Image (tube, rainbow, N blue to C red; front, side):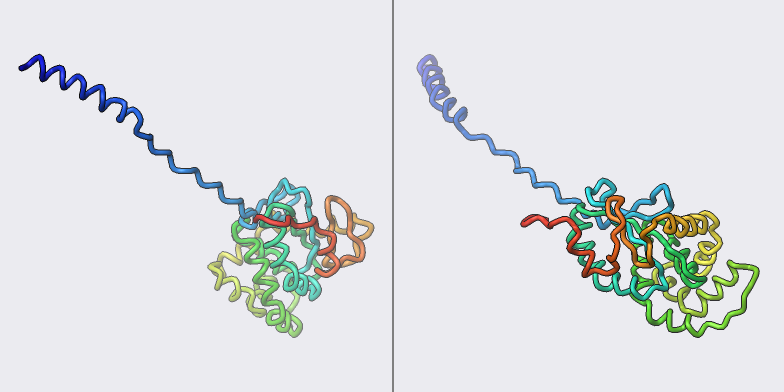
Amino acid sequence: MLPRLLSLLAVGALVVAPAIAQTPKPHPAAARPAAATDWTRTVTLGANGAYILGNPNARTRLVEYMSYTCPHCSHFAAEGMASLKKDWIRRGLVSLEVRNFVRDPFDLTAALLARCGGATRFIANHEALFANFDPWMNVAQSYNGAESADKVAQMADIADKTGLFALLAKRGLTPAAQRQCLADKQAMSDVLGLTANAWDIKEFSGTPFFVMNGKALEHVHDWATLRPLLPPLPRSGN
């Protein structure tokens, strides 16, 4: 009886084994495609002290010379920045380097405050200043502060009376922190250095002024004339 039972078990094992061997193995989960980089989240500080938004290795490198007290710069920010960021910078097709051209003490005050908080805050500060251009510039036009040998104190007075301190305080920058930014000698040197650099461009004619891949764009001072010069957008994809 025992030999017969062992024989049956052996036969059963031979029958079951192929079935086990043929059982398909589960496939590993398909790897999800990597999300495309959103380059509007990347801001770097260039060697010249200018902040650069987007892919540092973009094939098209756009430079904008701008002034915070320039109404045409404000119009460009309102008309073109959203599309420029969404369609070109986000995809890594274009990078934007923002260079200051300081026109007056109000512009210098705003330029130093825009840099308050470094690269992580610059673009948001920059856009907030232009988004609120009319309110603070209306006050600036009637500003009657006295000239002072203490330039930091004078800029602090401008920032206080024009509402710039209050504007950036809503963005998490205390007035005390902003006063420190106004006293930042390196930031001051960078901003004034960028301003001086503009005069080295023979085609420079005022703000906004654009340079693309090292070539000055004459007669291009708004979104309508800049847009056709940007690289073509891909037909599909992000």
